Amino acid sequence: MQLLNNLKSYTINIADEAGVQARFIGQFFKNIFKNGFEWNEFIRQCYVIGYGSTGIVFITGFIIGFVLTLQSQPTMKEFGAESFVPSMVAVSVIREIGPVITGLICAGKLASSIGAELGSMKVSEQIEAMEVSGTNPMQYLVVTRIIACTLMIPLLTLFGDAMAFLGGYAGNNVSGDITATLFFTKSMQSIDFSDLVPAMIKTVFFGFAIGFVGCYKGYNSNKGTESVGIAANSAVVTASIWVIIIDAIAVQITSLVVYQ
Image (cartoon, rainbow, N blue to C red; front, side):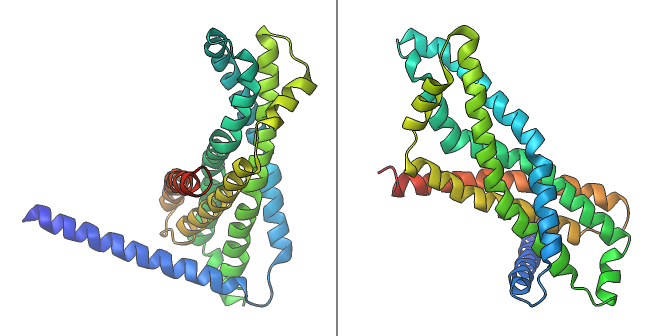
């Protein structure tokens, strides 16, 4: 009986949380089309989210390409297919590794920062002050950040993919000798339009999920300083889970639509 009561309570809590999130996302779409879009704040968020994340994406992308090349060379060499390493790295990075790793890195960096920022504003009653002063906090704080994430994550993914190619070239030259022209020619020849487009489409959903989760957790945090840390931590975990879920769904759809 206690187990059933706990299960019932857990189900009710999930349903309540889903309802609050549905109402929040409804307010987001409603405020997109309202007059007075905050262009200055949107551009500032694009700079903070995009340019502010290039450093960690550069390091991560380069290391991914470098390590993937070094790990693949011995195995490929056993089968006499060492010349296919650039193609293998390029396809792996473009299709799956680049988008997912960039999405997870940005989920950790951006979702936590957005959740902590909006959570601290909620705790210090700055959001209520904006409402009193006639400013629409949903339009100013939430809409700009979610759209900026949705736009910047695909661009950061392209940047990370380019750095992975650079890391792959560096890894190839650790134990071998290949010109930059030959390496990048082989890499680009192996990539089809059907590889790049699905990968970029799913990064748009990655960006939306990261921005939405960060804003939702911060905007709806409880009063008290402890809730800021809880909001930031919960945003990271939830956004990372959504990135993995979206990627799993995207892979299935792509396999059915594109690769069959």
